Image (tube, rainbow, N blue to C red; front, side, top):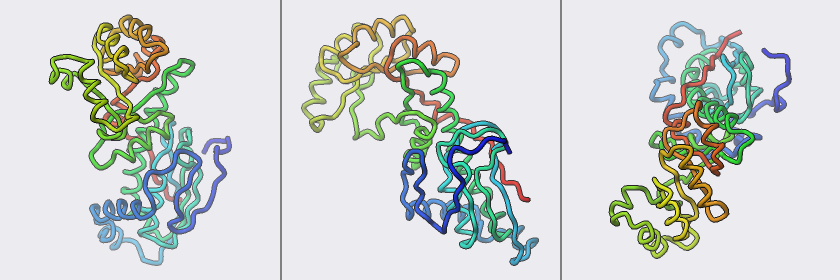
Length: 304
């Protein structure tokens, strides 16, 4: 373990206490957490773990620590808690690193004390949830740090696993990122294929959206040239999406939009390039890789 104190005081958790952490609000309520985690445990046949049932006596108790193997940002603690509790309703758990915590290598996230059978059977499910969500949070944090000091914020996309969108977008928030529109009904994004359907007429597309969408619905238009950007801004778009542009062209579009609408860079953004993109003056940078390409965060359950 590291010598410094965790950013949140350790606390003990009572069975199925609703998760209220210091970071972003968890997107699932208690019933939804239990349903999701129970399904994952059943998929893994954790309640019929033949190896553990054959080798470990039912009275055997154990203590274990869920620890980091690399630096990163924690996400998914409520799901891990539920996994362990569903296998041992009397388990004692101390949370040392809550969701949104920036942890160093070899830090304790959870300290657990309970029946050895429950700890062993729940281990993989708990780790699967946390490694995936913490991986997203950690990658997001790296992008956020890369643009620190500029005006740009890092936002996610809809490139999420089906059924996992709320959790993956939550993990982005844990890492310091900002969520883009949550679904197709929450905001308008007129993309190149939409424009192709109206013969490239940006003004017509925006007018049709204004006539159809509920009043106040934000409208964003994907543009590929400064000329398209100028047309979209003049037509009243709240935001323009600068798609796969060079940094010089993005600067030109930022100058066109300055003070009139939000600018967002998109397309092939990498850690190696995000700082230079931010320095063009864009307001937002959307990064699909946050959710579709984040590597699993290295966590382990160590028995004492």
